[in-house]
Image (tube, rainbow, N blue to C red; front, side, top):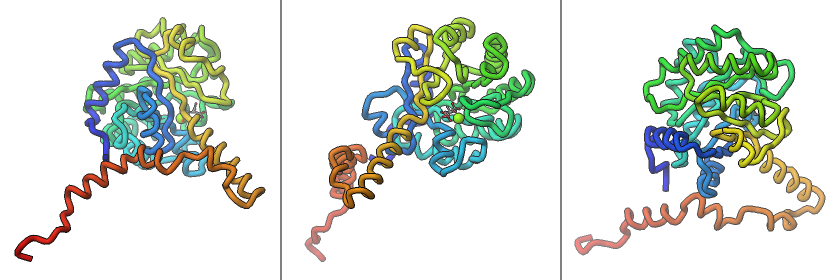
Length: 301
Ligand SMILES: C[C@](O)(C(=O)O)[C@H](CC(=O)O)C(=O)O
Ligand SMILES: [Mg+2]
């Protein structure tokens, strides 16, 4: 009941260990803490907190409008509700070097196991949209160096995301990624790659874990676990997927309610009350309550 049974540092160590094992880790995006519970219940390896989802949850576009406080608060709410490691999208770090340092410490305090920082120009935009721009090599490296220096827990996974592939081409993106590893990145997220060969090129060139972003309606194909594993990918995220699924279902239900005047036709597709209670661990709260409160009168009363 209540919060995660593991400390943030234990979850960070666990993530590092799993990455060393060479397996492909799957991190679906949790649009809220309850979704993180479901992801854990279904046996996934970790939870992703997407910047696009934090923004969309506030009904805002993913164009750098959300603040560090908003992202950190959401990440903390999610991380504390799961024993799985949480990887959070820190966008461009919410500013330049000094802000990046503060971002890292704030997210560390939020209890996440890792975070990624990207090399887009501020204000950033979704990596699968046209017209994005990246900062120069020195600025990109400076962000990562500032992050590495600011980190207090050496187990916090520091991931550098590069958006250079779509802007500067594959070779420049590989050079950028190598430079970011030299600057202190523990892992790399090459954004908007277009083929498995490109993932393999990053995995072969870098010698650190590489992340694949399997976002729907983006630039790339939705590859399978096996395809990504064979390309040498270490982590796959499905960042916005559960939000899209839930919002699709919500829209269908609202249409049915409008058309039919009741939600009877939708009940079969809903999560049941008992399943919700199971995820919330309701029974443990009832047992706790029963053990703490003793309503029987004592002799002398
Ligand atoms: C991974 C990502 O950064 C996110 O915020 O989830 C987005 C996802 C998306 O917009 O589909 C991205 O820029 O790829
Ligand atoms: Mg993002």
